[in-house]
Image 1 (tube, rainbow, N blue to C red):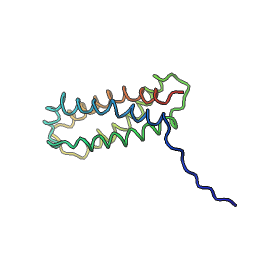
Image 2: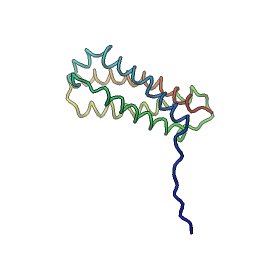
Image 3: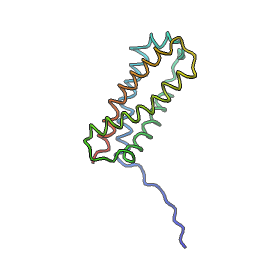
Image 4: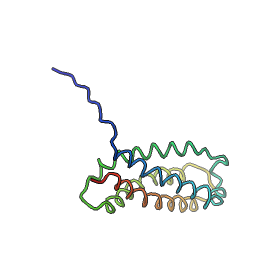
Length: 142
């Protein structure tokens, strides 16, 4: 009886492209959305710190990008077009992300207006995943 250690293969080119497809657009979209365009609205909500720790946000995006890139070929191995697959994947992971970045935060954090927070974060999530879903699909295309 032989014992064999199963070592998963190293992440391939598509994985790394999928990771980049998530992080490269997400970082500037998030930065501009939260810290420039809607900064006064988020400030009025009273839930964010004045001295945002940007490296934590970047590390969070790297972890998310790795998970979403790893999951794509396992969940969306379809023969549909890259755009259709990407939009469907963006909808799926966007809904998942929205559940813990928007709903859960609104449920447990003190803020001046839950409806304003929900509107801001829902808008951000829609923009983000409408872009990154198709890009991740493109990174993993055959």
